[in-house]
Amino acid sequence: MTKPLRKLLVVEDDEGLQRQLRWSYEDYEVLIAGDRDAALTLLRAETPAVVTLDLGLPPDPDGVSEGFATLEEILKVRPETKVIVASGHGARESALRAIALGAFDFYSKPVDIDELGMIVRRAFHVADLEAENRRLAETVRAGSGDVLGGIVTGAPEMLKVARMIERVASAQVSVMLLGASGTGKELLARGVHRASLRAAKPFVAINCAAIPENLLESELFGYEKGAFTGAVKTQEGKIELAEGGTLFLDEVGDIPLPLQVKLLRFLQERVIERIGGRKAIPVDVRIVCATHQDLDGMIASGRFREDLFYRLAEIVVRIPTLAERHGDAALLAHHFLAKFAADNNRSFKGFTPDAVAAITDWHWPGNVRELENRMKRAVIMAEGARLTAADLDLGENNDEAALTLKTARETADRVAIRKVLARTQNNMSSAAKILGVSRPTLYDLMRGYGIEA
Image (cartoon, rainbow, N blue to C red; front, side, top):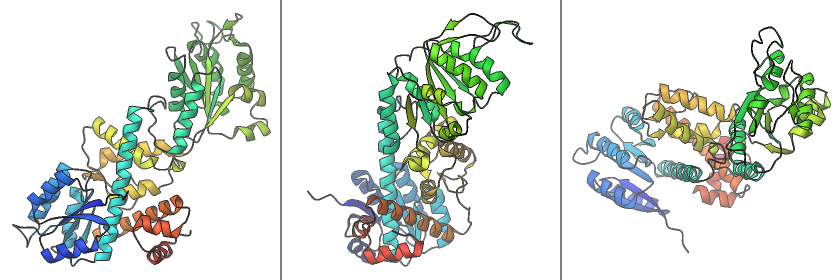
């Protein structure tokens, strides 16, 4: 069965250019509109993902007022539409205004068909990515979000972790979560608790790295009145407070060796003694712990007890970094944009192309926490209708529109080429077909961008 062609709406009043564009875009179902009313009618009826829009439309063919009015109405009706704006009237000023209103990109007349074709292909690529992200977000909201403890994902690498969490949650085993800082270890620990038979009981978390060594023992095990100076009353520790539920030991690699011995004894006997106390107190609690440290190396150097590790790590779950979660950076960015915009009573139309490319291409050393912080700051500080790479502090804010658009195009092209090469396992014919270019063109682009297969 032949796959239906993707729909491209061309809003252009010049009949000769209409015919040229229709002939040039044989890979798309081209819809033609000569004025605003016709464009909006086709937009509602056909829902094209990409629109090329000439700003010089009747009744103002020598100006841009009608074109900008059409742009605003298109984005009002379908905000996700990628609108590529064209004009020969005050190109730089029109470009800045169009991008500020939410246009995807801009090109100047006279039309260079090859250049416009590349912009159109990239617009469809971004539209496809955003559509997939919206689909994945709906899937998460409808299903696996609760199991994951609120983690938003569509990446196979993270969904594999989710399935593992589901399997181990109901088992009476201790779980060790290994992953870099900012990867969502506590959210996953909460997911383990919520999916377990202990869900109705307490979930108690303690960050072992955040508490001074001399206070950590009393925080975990509690103390009796008069056990030390300042102990004016008996205090239950975190272990007791988690009775019947789950105790989450975050950054367990920071527990000092003397306290590791006491924790091991508790895990073996399932009883504790408060500091200053003599009474053995039985405690029924499940242990989930996490660390970003290399525990194997710590065991080898004598800084972490091997017998304690095996008690804590009956099941080990390794959490991928955000850079390893393919597609999740963009998905999470949309999630955080909606969340923080609502929290701060602000409204945005999404991201500019340079922001999408920068989010996809960034290596995210701080993982999800870094992305969340950048998004929160950007939502508060941004002035435009769409967040830019500069708003996210992921790119330079260049005042020259042409340079900004050129840089954005190049960045998006690099990202698209790398992704398609990875998907096709460097099959040049398949990659060229997906990207909509010839093999020689693909080789030229790779050479120009320094991409090696």
